[in-house]
Length: 344
Ligand code: KG4
Ligand code: ZN
Image (tube, rainbow, N blue to C red; front, side, top):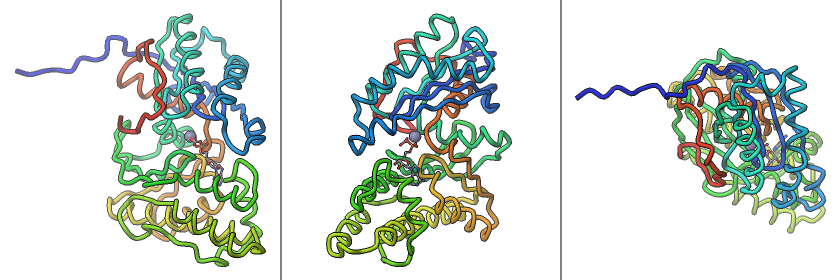
């Protein structure tokens, strides 16, 4: 018997997708045409609110998303020169992330989809990060190796084709961004820690302290909790150490492991490009070292603008368009999935 897969009955002709992102501490909305043409992108950061507490407070984040979601969506539509009636589909991040924060975006997207009678698309936040680079270069060739480094995840992903991935490795403990944030606290820098360490490192010596490079030459997984503990121990034993030297040495250890592993994977899997994604991809040293290594190895370095690395809704709208083409719309009974994985 031959079974022929039928196209989804609600297969879309949609071109203008409104994306909504509320998985953590950024309330964001964007309009993207046909999966890669950016019409608008608005991001309202809650950083100042959470800085008072030294980190993201889930309840504070949910309440802020509630206050901001309608103004941010209105601003994204206005920036795109569009009305809600021009939108063909509405995509929102439904996981992974903070459950209360995700629910605000998902509920807003489903309500708007119902009112406008357009498809709702549930988007995986990790998959959205993988697609951010396409918003700046729609002709990127696959396969490509993506180093996805954010506050909650660190993954080496072989992007084989559209919506087709193989996760080669991931962190066994702390995510790279989490390590940046925790080390920043240890050396007395404020929240968010990643950008603060990036800035301070410019004044420090990256060779001042030889911090450990866990798993640098083994396999595809990562581990950063030992490094974080090594920094804490070093600061405790050397209270007068120059913080800039600690920051630069820590940053160098993280970057070296990330880039060397990506370089080895590109060689082993015969891939011609390394792409950076996620908030930590905004790091100056990671960007510079990736460019250097790719130039040396004859690889293409795909390094999106910082705004495309950190959380935004344009990447959500981009994936929404691809998912809509491939799978049709999601059910309006879709809820938040705080622990969603890339290959769920
Ligand atoms: O992707 P993202 O915006 O949110 C998540 O999905 O987690 O990533 C946030 C993470 C935080 O840990 C933040 O400290 C880190 O990205 N980050 C940086 C830099 N900018 C943001 N880490 C190092 N250097 C930076 N310049
Ligand atoms: Zn993210």
